[in-house]
Amino acid sequence: MELVKTISNNKIIKIFLISLLGSILLTISAKIKIPFYPVPMTMQTFVVIFLGISFGYKVGVTTILLYLLEGIAGLPVFSNSPEKGIGITYFVGPTMGYLIGFVFACFIAGYFKYNSNYLNNFLKILLSTSIIYLFGVIWLGTLIGWDKPILQLGVYPFLLAELFKILLLTILAKKVGKFRKFI
Image 1 (tube, helix red, strand yellow):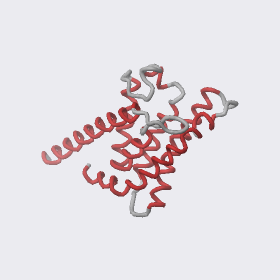
Image 2: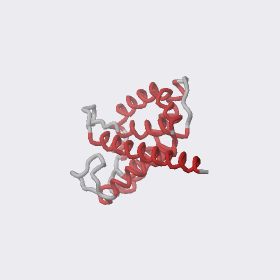
Image 3: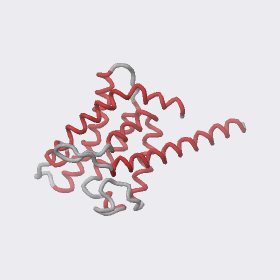
Image 4: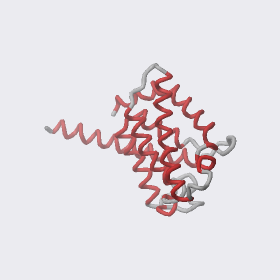
């Protein structure tokens, strides 16, 4: 019985450390902007999907929720914080749908198994990434009105960068999916 408690405690500590490091990685990925056409690219969506693929949906979603709670609590973890505000004020702004989409995208990416079939891996990652944009566009339309060019504002500028990140994740998926064994 004592051995079971020790194993369980070690697993909890491991999950906490992975989630903490993952939230730090997500914060860094949100802050670094790479010049890209037509808008600068962050690697935030890459890290969201990477966490799901690498550690599975349980640890991945835990990490994303920790990140969101840090931001809601006022830590400047989000992409344009503190410039555009912090805490709940920033969270309920135009990017809230995308941020909530992170949770569901990470869940889906973490739920799938990845193998040597690049086409299947690509489609799984494409679906996962699309969830972020689905939630983002729904919130953006609700917030600014459906009469605005929602897709031109919230999707089209990011497509080329997302394709690059999806292709990169497709190449890495089989390798990084092996991290799941260590949890």
